[in-house]
View 1 (cartoon, rainbow, N blue to C red):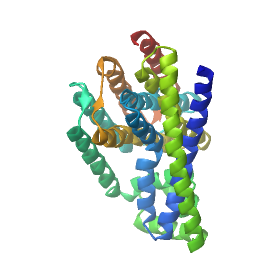
View 2 (view 1 turned 90 degrees about the vertical axis):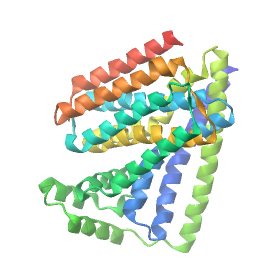
View 3 (view 1 turned 120 degrees about the horizontal axis):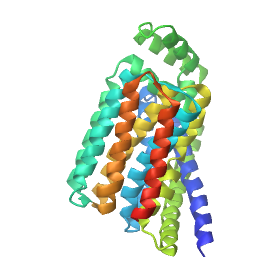
View 4 (view 1 turned 90 degrees about the horizontal axis):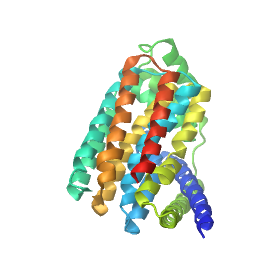
Length: 356
């Protein structure tokens, strides 16, 4: 009975998302216990942590021999991040952003989106193309490590607040320093904030490491179980309504795995953290394309169809272009721009129904 599959889908999604949350937090604690750089911890979590649901779902889909869900999940999530997550934030709060920081990253996202489209022309993303994706992802991560302290601080603020490792970084100190003057924020102030933050965090004992390790293992199990039944139930739902699994990947799974970004959006609106929100969306979309498609295509070639080639991928490119235009247009992403993005997503969904 299909309603059972809907229930399984919902419960599996909860397992997947909560498992991802606990895995990220426990991994941060374990890494800190071994004196790994706080910034290295944080940067890794930004790059990988927000993409764990998509990655787990993609691997589960491959195991089920249904790669249509993989490409649908990635492309659908990227469109939803811009057309729903960013749109909702812009509609309910005028988002102040630093366009000098994000225009370059947005351009990189556009180039990688175009590369994904080019790779899909032959109706599959191969092992070699997956290696190329991962190579560009490595370049993206290395480049972040080389950025100015001012830009690094943006990631620290994001990490400290949204990944429950806020004690690693003293946000109030950082915000006050940056608030006075961008030039006033330098390496010494960065170190001061980090050192002060470390003093506020109790040292992690051996017993706690064991506990966090156990939490990590249980989280991985929850992610594996959740992603497996999420895909199985999604396939059953698609079969019941006689629709393609690609459609399910583009809609139910894509929106479901984008819930962490939506949660960040709500918090960002309350805290007026426009830069954090935009950084999260751009970073998540880059990770979805390069990390998820990269790893998935190393396991097996990812098949693409005319739906992706002639509709969903071009629409993803269009939404990314809209994003770049809005970033370039001023210091704010305005309400009417958010409405344009949301209406674009609604048009995408309606067109998807007719296309499928």
